[in-house]
Length: 282
Image 1 (cartoon, rainbow, N blue to C red):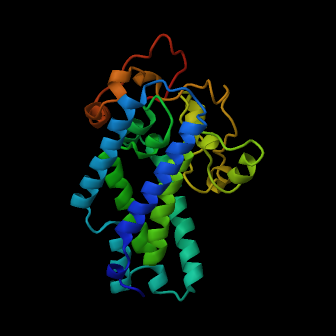
Image 2: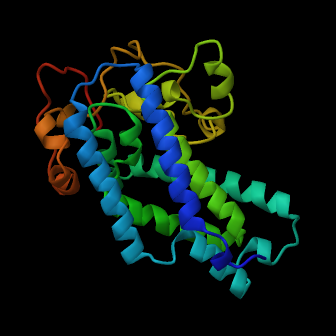
Image 3: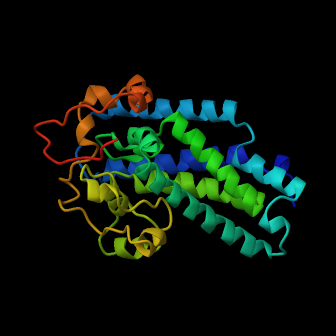
């Protein structure tokens, strides 16, 4: 097995991220699906700032990270694929699919468990839905997520190359399916049959509780269909549906970096009288 030092993991991930971010941002600029509720000049710097902070926190707190965990598992013979003989293609595919399911299940838990929801609502409180929403997560949620992922990698004895591929795929699909854009209607259902599209995931960012508790997938659309959490469309049109959380509709409360970092520790505000839909409670 190729040592982790020989694989430029950080460069691969950074290059893929920068390229996909640029392509999705350009797509949004050329063909936006919705008008912005909050100007980009206010949202983007703060959403990008919390993403940058997350990188620093994860590097400092969990330097081993996902790829390092896979390398450690290979070195010490931990996990399924270091005990059971499997071809490299099978091990690769099983790892990518199993990790995708783990992320889907984790996402459901972050909605179902109140203390985890307090962290995850930072992501949902964004009043717009675009490529930077896919980067907007609280650092504590990111820490928990990487620890869960590391545990799964150890249990599987996941191959290093499969873990790198999954990390690139997860970053790419998170940017893609949060795009403020729409695929052509003729091809969108065919793409959605395999992977989560912006139209599918936008439903998940609705202020309506039943819509928000659907379409949890980031990559494969299979899991929501299989476990009964799939919803094809919102009640309203995509261009007019309300995005965010009703209890956090004040822009000053959800846009700033400090507000995002403090949000899990604050009680929810009163529902805006101009926004009658009920949202998820803590």
